Each structure stands twice: as C-alpha cells, then as structure tokens.
Image 1: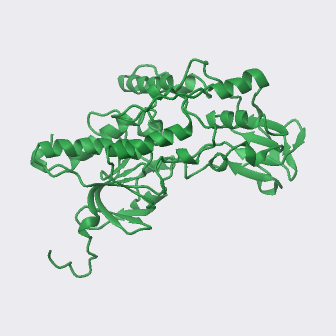
Image 2: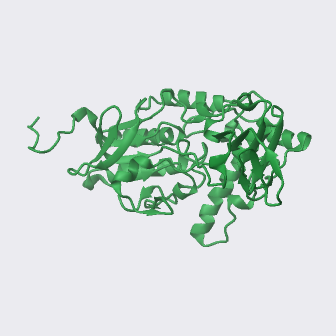
Image 3: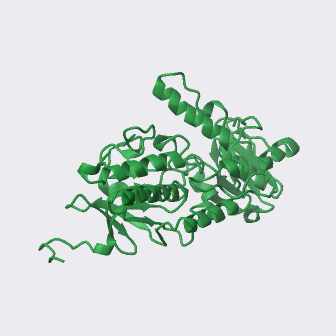
Length: 388
C-alpha cells in the first residue's frame, strides 16, 4: 500500500465500501436484500461483488417495531405484509399480526439472507470526503467511506410535537406515541389523546377500558375506511395513483378512502364502547384543557399521537437541495419511484413515504422502491464499459 498523501487522512481499506445503508429496519433490510441480488449479478458477469454495509442504531434487530406498545398491530394480513424474497410467516392470533410478530420476522429475514448489519452503530453525520468521489459516514463507532449512501432511517426517532397554546403550562404528564408502552402507564387517569390518524385511533382504543376518562380530539373528525379495507388495499390504491399520475389520468389517492383503518380492536372500541373523536381543544390549561365553546375538563395526562417527521439529521452536512423541509428526490431511469437525491447522485432515500415511492413506509410497499434504488446504484457503480 502506498503512503498516504501528506495532509490527507487515509481511508482504512476495511472501512471503505461501495454502498452504506443507514438504518437496519424494514427499508434498510429490503434495500440490502436487493443489493445482494445486484452483487450476485455482478459476480456472474465477472465483476467484483458490491461491498455493502448496513449501519443500525438499535442494539437488536426489528427496526422500530420492538419499541411500539404491546397491542400495536399491522393493518394487513401477514400474506400482504412481506418484504421481498420471503413471505412473512402466517399469523395465528386474533386480528392482524402484532408488532412482536413483525419484529421476529425482520430478525429472521436479516439472518436468512446474512445481511451485513452492524449494530449498535449510530450515524451522526455524512459529508463529502473531498477526494475520490467518496462520502464520509461518521458514526459513534468510527468512520466509514462509501461510494453511495442509502438513507433508510424512517421516522420513528423524530416524533412531531405540535404547538398547542398552554402546553408548556399544563401540570400533568405529556407523552408522545413514541413513548407510549401500554395503558398501564395511565391506568385510572383522565387522559386526552390528540391526533386523527391510525396511531391515535389505536391508542384511544387501547386506553379506553383502563382510564378514568378518555377524550380523543383531532383537528378534523377522522374518517374510518370501510371495514373490509386494509393495508393491502391502501398499497394497491397508492400504486395505482402513481401510475395514473404518470399517465396524466385523474388520480384517486389513499386520502380519498379515509383516514383510519378499522382494525378489530378499533372496531370493537367504536361499535361496542362508542369511541369517537371530538373537536380539537383550543388550548391546554394548567389543570386540563379548554375547547372553543368555553367548556373545560381536568386532565392527568395528554398523549400526542401527532405523527413523525423523517429522521434525516445525519444528512445535514451534505447541503442537499430541499423542498418543504425534506430532500428533493428524482426517479432513476425506468423507475416511477423518486429515490435519488436531485442534487447529489451518490445519495438515495428509501422508505419515507410517498415522496420516496408509493406506500414506501410500509412493509409491502417498500420492496419496489428498494429494488429500483439498489439496481440503479449497481448500474451507477459499474465500470463505464459494463453499464447497461
């Protein structure tokens, strides 16, 4: 090996890879699976396999699924909740698969395909290495250098807390979906659940039998999807919307169907216990909450089921072009999925929602964007004479 250039930090050979995937949850695993297929194709063609590493901040497999509350469940049957290559094992319990079942599946998937996951490794920053077209990936366990980077960190680590008047003066407990671990945290208390989506409905249903009083509020009244609609239908609708938009046809998107999937637990709470969301509060008070019509209630706790934002702090150092606070993305040739940064062709984003591919934040939906990203990366990293 030649001596390092004076003034330049040497990149350790064992820490230099072709592709670095940040995040070892469902999106990162789906991408790593397809990168493995790309490597196999390269080897058949007499080219070197892709050197790939997956860096995951968690100390165990399963992505964010083990962090959910005990009753958290999928919207879809196991047969329609699979990552590419291997179907999710059948679910024999009530309703749809539990978060625990999903986490076990992801752990087995990772092992089945011997995916190159390193954990716990938290990526703190990604910057241009300055030479050789490499990216420098800084972590709490040493740096890596990569020719391409796939950000697949999801949203779980960035909960969204809305600005509601009086929240700072409220004397009770406040927690987010991110921190909810079950009704035992709030047994026999007076609780306000804020949010109009699926998490809010599931949390309200979970809490209702265990608390002294439950108030569920939302900016607008949630609309339940038809009881026979599940995640499979949502995925098919989102996929068709992408095709219609590309063809210039009228688009029927997922939002047109409704807001809340009526899982068995949510249906029971709605039909048997009268669970319903009311109008949003005007403000919190030191003792509780007040509505626009002037009536007030005393509260012990507020649960903010108000969603998440993409966890992309590690990309700040690259200065990517952004729009509405998120990186601008484009679709690689031949793909409908906008998974590539528009301003840095070395950077790819998978699994953050429709702006990185239809239904890409779901188990069944992430496979296609992950495939397109992996194969486009593989083609970009091929020797010029060997590119398709």
